[in-house]
Image 1 (cartoon, rainbow, N blue to C red):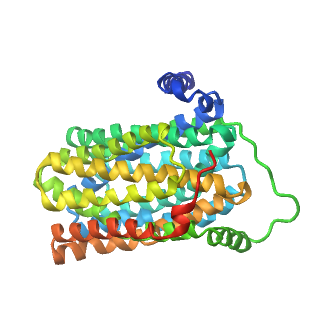
Image 2: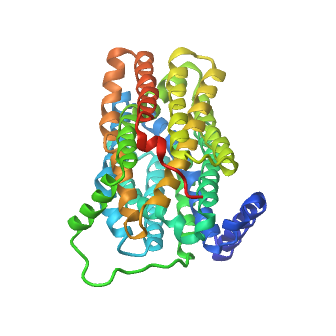
Image 3: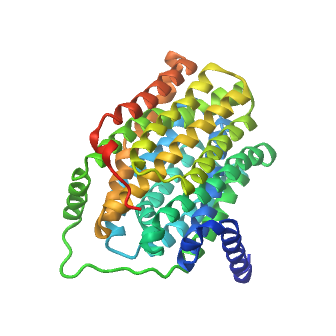
Length: 422
């Protein structure tokens, strides 16, 4: 694709975004916000394809549920190990540079994985190694990406910008998950992952065009450990923050394996491979509807409302456990996505409005690592544990833990009492 073609693509997507969301003109007047959401939306499209493709790539190579869990865990473990470093860098160097470099490098690694699969040279250990590299790249830019929104819009438009950015990303996911199942069935996992490599390249170009401020701290910077300590103290200063990070730890410990390992097997064997892609599409359709709702619905106690809606995430694993009917699984997936999106938007806005700018990337890194630190363990253990107790029984356990932990978090006065600023 030529440079002119890339420029035309970016201009076309940004124009489409502007035309589609006339009700949010405040945030979309910003050139940098349009570039940011164009890049994140484009990469989200490819990222939704890859989990579907990678799962079936491992299974096509003769992998078991346990081996699939290890491959997915390699990505998650590398992400957890690297993300705190990414948070420190995000508060030290330009966040735009972190995002651009990560996207460009990810384009290369995904292209390599696609070439290995298409050429027939891939092995399960090799996929795990490349997945670990991708996890590191994702972790380095993740905190910077989440903290970037506040730099691209005026404070009065932050709430709509947070909701709109997530809405556009999850809209791309609706297309990507469904497209992933179609591509895997039609041309194979390798070519599906090649699409993800292309989207990373386009995202890198978008991020390179950002022009956002970066204020370098005056004087001598403390050590990396001192920076991390300052970020940890900021997290511990807010009870609602560390409490819900702990709740997220339980969520990802149990749910990561349910989606990454057990789900493709239960739904793929019971209904069909394309059905799993449709289920993930329904999940992100729930995200989309939740985002639309949050564009207009702005409860004063948004974190409390969002945490209550988070209990709906139990619906997806329970639906997979109790039924082999496609519509039941799709409904459960939709409710999961809807509840999670309402929570996520109010959670993101709560962080953006209550954490100082110079510590924002580090707080986001603690959010990411606290949320996902147990995910590699869950992914690695899900296969053996689920095979021992039964796949359906394990999905019931997952649903009960996810729903119950969300409701227990509502007992905290800090969760119930936090009020949004706008």
